[in-house]
Image 1 (spheres, one colour):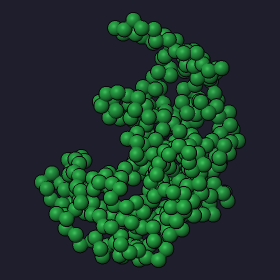
Image 2 (cartoon, rainbow, N blue to C red):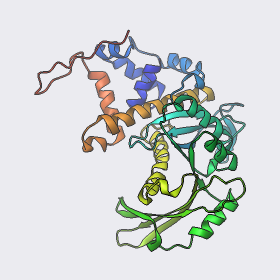
Image 3 (cartoon, rainbow, N blue to C red):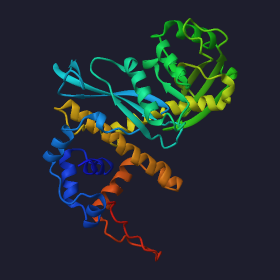
Length: 367
């Protein structure tokens, strides 16, 4: 059942009905390879997903961020109750925290934790951190944990340091003392005082990012572990070089400034935003918000969200690591997903060899 769901996700299925249609069209070779002997009815798949607990699907970032999907149902655990003003009806807000290994260019999701209806991202941070350490603590997979302002607190910062890790938290007005001091210290610095700068082209516009760094010689009470304060300025220029947008964001970190070069500090912040890119792809290519598959059972909605992140990671690793050419690695996600769908309905036990005479038979399915 889970193989059918994952195949449907990476092949671009927008509903359980489309998954059923895909499993009906699989070639014999793919049925044997994937262990899907017959068509899987959408009702059977719905019942199977609804019977699973989200915690029963563990798959074990450096960067964490929350995401919410609205469904027309609510309960007291998996979907926070809310009222949609546009439709004036009760909706459930299904929320998760996604952990993404942003030090990898593929940005694989390495963990996802549902947020109970009774709490929020701030309250879930330490639980998410514990889950990550339980899975990856011995692997030395990451040493720096980044999060936006939604989890920035003295308690969460201390929890990171107590585990021997370092943190990078965004700071907003929810932490008034930190934000005020950071803005007072770094906010008046001019572009020629930036420690590092990068420029990118985005749809005909130039996006200039500048980072300003300061070593924290003194910190507010409870933040004795704070070592570096950062300001990242994002300036957008049109094709004529006229500024059309300017934004400043502030961060605090326990990592000493000397541990990274100026350019590496800017790269860390940019990679932190990679978890937001993952969420954009979940809503774009994988259509999570528009087509959650299951809406009336919030627990099953969470199960599908976990599976969708596994599917995203498989696609991300294939696109960013397995595909060798730069052209292939920049192909649109929907094209890659269409290729998977095409392979699922056309693949045979022996792939066409083209100009090569090497045998490319599918290996047997694992016992």
